[in-house]
Picture 1 (cartoon, helix red, strand yellow):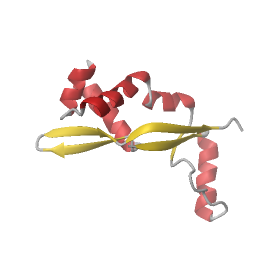
Picture 2 (tube, rainbow, N blue to C red):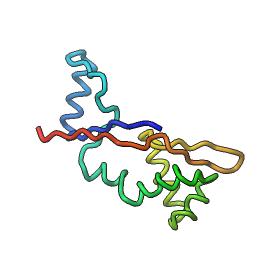
Picture 3 (cartoon, rainbow, N blue to C red):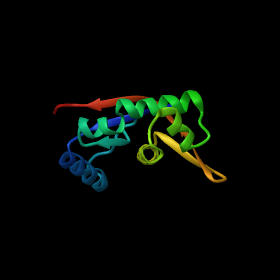
Length: 118
């Protein structure tokens, strides 16, 4: 498993940064975050306690399907599916289709969060 570097930066500042990178004014440093959130709140929605429990269940129990993970977690299948799709978007989990089932796998087991007030 791997570590995911996450950054938190206000949206306006992030947009300026993207434009500066695109224009060649700045070059991202090696090891900088690849995933950015615009607030601690938005990060907290993805890495909530409930979602971290899902990741732990996936890592420890290796469920064969989203339905099995939902049973293990006590959450609704639709809720688990939506959560996993969001996590897949950020590269935290991988969803692999096997026959008629979709199997979740953890890609990331550690998070390195960079947050600066300035």
